[in-house]
Image 1 (cartoon, one colour):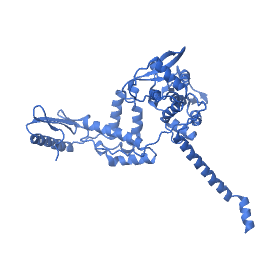
Image 2: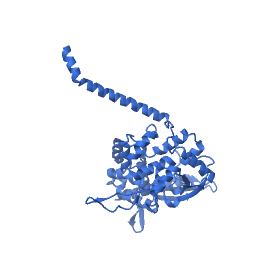
Image 3: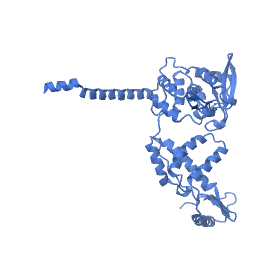
Image 4: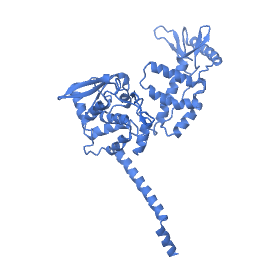
Length: 412
């Protein structure tokens, strides 16, 4: 049998030490032998287990989720809106349960409903990861008052949650063609169309576009022309390793000019026009956009016949178009903020010029094919399905044709 975790020998002194977190408590001690250390640790763990079995938190998962979101809001978490969206169906399924009742068995209802709704394994796993984090906080950080100065974890032990397999279940990237772009953008609300077109001309992630601030804008003079460059703090960059820059081509610059002045802080905002008594009421003030992947996006992609197109597919489209235009891989990596050896956090004016020139190559179709092999395969399958559907419809009409029925009667 192996040694108990948390018990080890100090290589310098030869003393056996105990240092272990158990049920939210840190257990420490020094002993002359491994046997003494093991016996002490096992006794303390049994004592905590016995005491914990008599202490049960009355906090529900819904209350724990609310506490978690409040804490994250205070910390200014960028992905807070996404986590709220992920937690909503979880709360609908298990929000009423006490924390110690949350486990794989009770979460199965949530998983089954999301799978039935067509959600990917990755999306479901993201929600389960937030649930796991909340349970870990309840077991290791959050405390409940027992009176007499004593406290205990809200949860005696966080259960292990089983994630869905992702290998073989991951959705393939789905770049769009220029024709599909021309169908999608008019179907979107104006503010969302501006954001989508901005992504298609900069390659920046949607969370950056949603949080883009005017105070981040820098005006760089290139060849007697002022170019807009946004310096994005690392807090809003995936991985948060360093700040990054968004270089705007002519299309992105025109979008900025069209929305400039709508809001003092955020670049991309929206408002709902209100109509009362058949007269146009004063417009509501502009508000920041919470996320691009919303009901309006779903409605637009359906109207444009683009299936399950994701907002992130627009970034894949930028990468494909840059490659098709002959742009170097290193420049594509800089545009998409992909980490590579030798990449610097701060761009020189020459680098800004290089990135802008690359992005100018994809501001319109320029007669290019702009289709990956996967896109061509997808279009071929769609064409086959359409042809098959037309054949079925033609055969059905033929069966119902009065002329055919008359012929059959004459033959009889």
